[in-house]
Amino acid sequence: MLTLTPVITVSYEVKSAFLFLSALEFAVGILTNTFIFLVNFWDVVRRQPLSNCDLILLSLSLTRLFLHGLLFLDAIQLIYFQWMKDPLSLSYQIIVMLWMVTNQAGLWLTTCLSLLYCSKIVRFSHTILLCLASWVSRKAPQMLLGAMVFSSICTLICLGDFFSRSGFGFTTMLFMNNTELNLQITKLNFYHSFIFCTLGSIPPFLLFLVSSGVLIVSLGRHMRTMKAKTNNSHDPSLEAHIKALRSLVSFLCLYVVSFCAALISVPLLMLWHNKIGVMICVGILAACPSIHAAILISGNAKLRRAVETILLWIQSSLKVSADHRADPRTPDLC
Image (cartoon, rainbow, N blue to C red; front, side, top):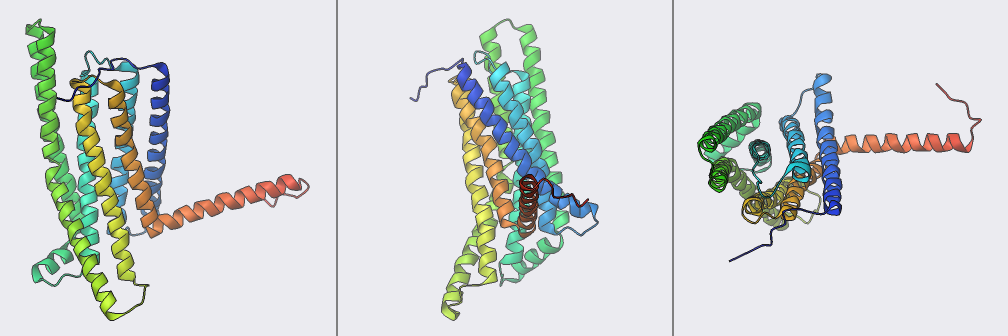
């Protein structure tokens, strides 16, 4: 049987290092997702039409901003307010449950993105699949709205179940003086809510796997066709396949890693009382969405152009500043 040494308290150095890492991950996550949001929102302000992909990215960046805020609150709670002898304070449970439903909403949005990639890139031959691909391409806003409605329903059900169980647990504690029994009831209620919320992620995850699998099969078929017909290495369809798969496969890997970290953090918190282990898991959870946001920026032409524009502006500003310091007699042109 696996046993871990309880680490109920951690040193000041470990807390400081974890706080620095959490603040850095929070800053990177906020910057990358704010950038994605502002680039797409600026088109809305200028009344430029948003593509279906940009609309999903706009919604996903908003979800990720809220997610990073919750993870930073989780880190602050762990550092300053969490007592491992009684790990499941109500505030910590609320943060974890809000993180779960927000992460589930992000999964639905990424699933919509994968379905959109699939409908635009894959060349279907079956009539039903052609109709589905055409519907996804034409009705992406409605699909996005449906995903958000379904995610909101799951959120209400999960939070309703959590708060009803929390209320039941609080009522039980009022009539019972057994501290150990009360803690066990709290743990069981939290386990149930955690598993119940996890079940809501199964439908979007399965859809995501199916659409990603279709893209992989389509890529293999397309590469075989290209080898048989021509030796031309520059093929727009092949590049589109690779860019879409890079985004989807990276999300799949990061989602599996973050899900495993969330799953491991529960026994680390409640059974083994290992605070350092929980801190590592929270650090992994905060890193994954930031990495995926950077991958989305690198794979999106409009976002890449915005990054290049900002870098050129910074470079020109630094050059003007350096020239002005080199020759202070140079008059300003404004």
